Length: 223
Picture 1 (cartoon, rainbow, N blue to C red):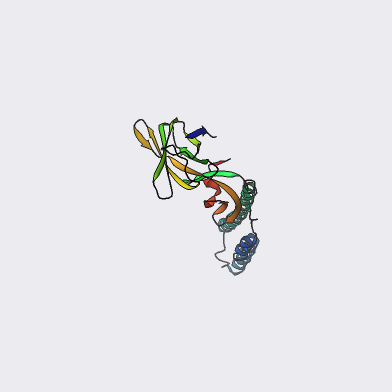
Picture 2 (picture 1 turned 90 degrees about the horizontal axis):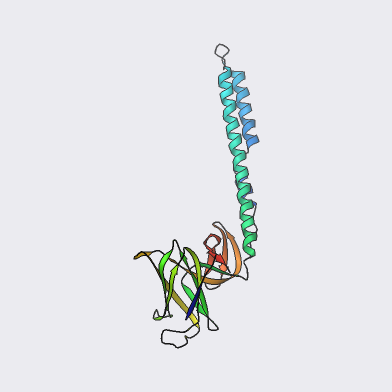
């Protein structure tokens, strides 16, 4: 028997990589100094009979201004990205000790209950689940009926199609959804407890029991 309902260690960002990157390229002020030295050298050594005109000087000044502006913009964007990443890490730490739904097909039957979820890209006329044991054998079919688009959660009480109680442990499930007689892509969502947070090159990730590392962007719902 099943029920269904509609549902609506953070790592601090290090400044070392940015510092090394900055040390490996000239800053805006250094580029401006080099430009001014070259411009002064050009003016000193120009042909008196064919001197640089104002248009040439103005053009070169505009070029260095553009380079300087881009450098400052890059610095600002790097700062904003670092700040955003730090904010994400802080937000993610609030999830430690809470359960989340993320893409996956695992079900853990404990104390007579197992929970999971389904994500539908659009409304479906019919949604059905097939629960399987560790060997891949089907133990229970669940008819969730018509469902709206979005994330929905479900619970299984561990009772099999034969009426017996399933042995506690790891199970899996598959989902099928139909709209207007045509199958639609539905995503199975596993439920897991967040035990930690990591910050990597790909962004913030959660350590979820039974699921491993889950990108923060893959979390569909926090329970």
